[in-house]
Structures are given as structure tokens and as C-alpha cells.
Amino acid sequence: MSVSIDQVFVKQFEADVHLAYQQMGTKLRSTIRSKSGVVGASTTFQKVGKGIASTKSRHGIVPVMNLNHEPVECLLTDYYAGDWVDALDELKTNVDERRVVASAGAYALCRKTDELIIDAMNTATTSVGDYSTGLTKDLILSAVEVLNTNDVPDDGRRFAVIGVRQWNELLSMDEFVSADYVGDSNPLVNGFEAKKWLGITWVLHNGLPVSDAKRDCFIYHASSIGHACGQEVKSDISWHGERAAHFISNSMSQGAVLIDNDGIVRVKCSDAPAA
Image 1: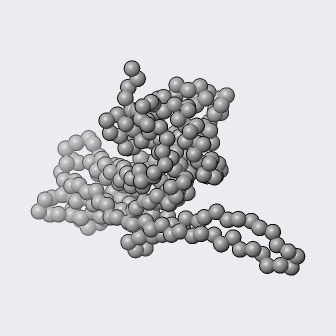
Image 2: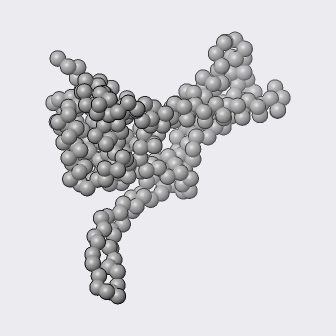
């Protein structure tokens, strides 16, 4: 195999990985605060307190709000996903082995990105429900009431991430599916179809915490969770003559952290089938 042919393979594989990562990509990264190009092992997100407006006398000094800034550190961790591609495999199968491995590696990194974000959500301490019922309208309104009580902005940046059974329960509610309530168009979250209802964008996800048919869902404001990226998905391809194969290593450096506990509510739902 000539050097030039090998470079073509490398460049094409890197393009496949990045394309696959974008197509399959994380469902949740675009729903929270995300910082790219981080240099170092960690970064800081600022949690800013509430300001108070005051009056002033004519020619007096404008009062200072004295905002409380609480830095929240987000640690970055390196993640890898690799596999071998035998030089002769592509000659013996109709499947594009390079693209298969590229897609598998990209999807593994996508899942890890969402896993980091969900782990950060799972540190939230405010909750509604007790796992005794599925996702009901009353349970949703209780969570929205908590956000409103905490003065969380209703600015179109509220999101909910729920499981498959909870999604089906929402589909049984006229308010959630009827165009009379939600309109005819559905928003897209990173290319995935979602639903907009009660000022909240609803996202289906399979990776939420579940144990003994007890499912944790989350309703949150985008500013309450932070995601940091030191390195986007990167591929390294090396030829190993003794194996007559390429080793493909995909890697990234990312982290996530809970910034504001007041901006997220855990919704405790039963994940058991309806009787």
C-alpha cells in the first residue's frame, strides 16, 4: 500500500467519523450551556445571582447591584473509542468496513457526551413525584411550578428529557399531540424531532437513570447545566504491518457539571407497564 493511498484512507475515515458524529450526535449538548475550545484540565462556569434595581437622586451615583458570582468548576476527561480494520476485510464483504467502524466509534462518543450531561443532571436535589405514577399532567405542572417559584426564565430555553414510556404517556394527552395546543410544526434538537408544549421543548432519550421500574426524568433551563469541550471528536489512524490492519482511535475531551440547582427539577416516574 503506497503512502498516498494510505493518506487518502486516513482523510476519508476522519471525514466519515465527523459526519457520523454530527448525524447521530448527542441529543442534549445543544439544550444546555456548552463551551468549546477549553484549554487545560478544567474550566469555570459563572453562576450569577439576582440583581436588585434601586432608585438614585438627581446627579447621584448609580447604585451597584453587587451581583453574587459563584464560579462552578467543570473537569474535563479524555475518552477513547477504537477498533481494528483488516486490510483484506473490505475485499471480502459488501459492507464498507471503514464506514461501519467510523459510525460505531462516533456513536460511542455521542452516547458518552449525553451520559456526562445526564450524570450532571442526576446531581440535582429538587424533585417532584414519588415513582408511584407515570408521567401525568399534574406531575408536569408541579415541576413547572417549582421552576416558576424559583424565577427560572420562561424564555423558550426550558427543556425536558424523558424516557420512552413517559413519551408514550405524553402522546396519550390531547394537549401534547393536538395542533390546537402545540401547533403544526415540531422543533428539531440537533436534528432529532422534539415537541414544544407549555413553553418546554420535550426530548426523548433512552439513557436516563432507571432502577426497579423507577425512572428519573428532568425538566430544566438551558443555563442550569454546563458542558465543556477541550477537544472535539478526533481520529488517529495507524497502519500495523504485523497485523496487516489499520487501528482506528477516536478520542475527545469533555465534561459536564450542574451549575444552578434552582434551574432543574427531577421528575420521579414509574417506568412499569400500565396495569
